[in-house]
Amino acid sequence: MPNDVSQEVVEKARTLNPEDALKACGETEGLDDIAQRWDESGAQMPDELPGYLTEAQWRECREWGGLGPEVDEVLRRTAGAISQSPALLRLSWHCYWRVYLCPEACPPRGWPEFTARLGDDAGVFYMLVGLGVIPLMRKWHAELGIPEEVTRETAGQARCYCDDMYRTGHNGLPGMYINQLGWMRHYTRERYFRLGRLEYWLAPYNWDELVFRHKTTGEVAAFAADGVRFSKDGRVFADETMYKDGEGWTALVERTDTHVSGHLLHPDGHGTPRRVSLPLGGWEPVLEKGVMTLQMHIPSGGRMTPEACAESILRASEFFPRHFPDDAPVAITCGSWIFSPCLEECLSAESNLVRFQRELFLVPSAASGSDGLWFVFLRQGLPDPKTWPRDTSVQRAILDWIAAGNFWGAGRMFFMLDDAPRFGQQVYRNAWPPSVVRGSE
Image (cartoon, rainbow, N blue to C red):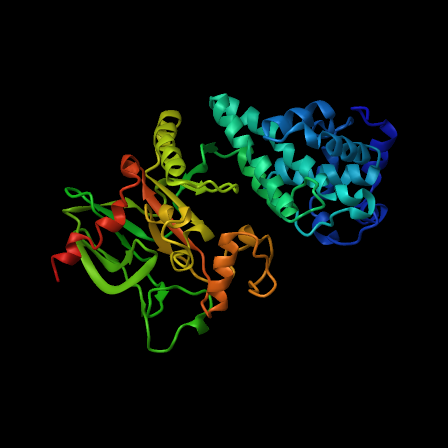
């Protein structure tokens, strides 16, 4: 297929409104969302074939993204089909513009798969847009002075998203899910990098827990956010009806010039009912809203060994202060199904996920029954133990646990960066409870 597109196709594409473009593709779904910012994207549509649809660019992008030449034929075929169809070209550009170029985040949602026009290649429509992140990412990283090694590692997220499509048995063909494209925008404008097994985004802490460290012993004490309601067993639920009347407690935090008091969190991800008071002469705040942190993101792909995680965290503790000394982070934080305290009940103590959890300070988050499970099962809604896939040991363990009458919820975590050299020693669990509690018992 030629790398350019005829002027006639471009001109025709520019005349299409959202409804006509969908009809020309044999689709009707997603019109309301597709109509968003339609005229703005059209005003910026290039006169020639957009770069992400040219063979020279998508070849280079798939190589940077960790994909092999076996996908070249389907990429060539799909890019060619898009470039010859005014409707597909206009919709593809609108998708690309919404993901990467729109002044505000405006990710496409609920769009059709375009199977009527593309058949089994439908997932590649979004894959080409997804691969389009890489030139923008490379430009951004170059402006920040980031080593090419790190840029190549970060670009590998393209392969992770394609692997998600492969996992569903999508006719053995590559592709990407549209609901993952919106995240790609972050790679083009945030200080967001992959370092080994894990990814990190330099950003302020946006949660309400208060974390203190003892100035002499180095112990860590974390207070639940003020006003959070806990069940009798220290869990938090999104639905108030999950709480039993008269049981549990509501966290209360009080902070003065000399003391802070409240309900401590246990590093295993549960709340504790007893209120304690810390003298601020001996304890200092180390994590609270607005403090600069690294938001951890965990690419799919397995192999989360303690050694791989330790190596990544140590790299992060050195990389960010070196490249961004004015915004040096103090902690790694994350919210994910991977930090659900339920996993310690589901999985073996020797599993990589449980071993990883035990190195961190887990924080409760409001359970709704399905939190984060899309990433495990690639399905929406409440999990059904009878019909949802059981292809992996983690899937089977979670579904069996739910089938036994338990209620699923995700979780959050933090890990202080100055503890990075001690990753592997379970520093938070081994120092629990803190001395302020032990001394009063």
